[in-house]
Image 1: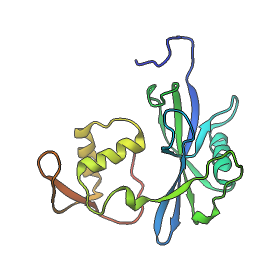
Image 2: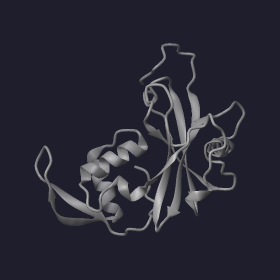
Image 3: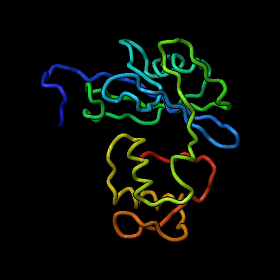
Length: 193
């Protein structure tokens, strides 16, 4: 077991993060906020923060989402828990990820000057229409914030039936890689690996 703290009586912090999606101009967008300080300064992150003592996780997710976006009534669903002690360079933070869905991206507004203003990113821009398995694996690694077993990843993704073989190959540093695309271009819920 890895530990970022030599004090065996220290406890990890608990945080919530929300992946906020909205439909916009016929596509789907994801809302990210800029990190203001620390070792991850100037990178993009999902809205979130630490859970208060005695606070329910769902309540913490709603509070944090409200502080970054001004949203009160929004559908929230718990997705996954990230517990790798080394994922946060400052301390051991266990993060519970939520997904929120909005019918319209314009509902988001900044409430306070000390809260960073976020930006909407097109979900379709995360991967090209045709992509290699390595590109898909890299995207999952970034989203899940943990490494993926490459053999198991390929087997499970192919068993889901969500990909089809594309046309041609893409040259990279190694041998040419086959291209794939999604069987449907609409938003799909994919079980986290």
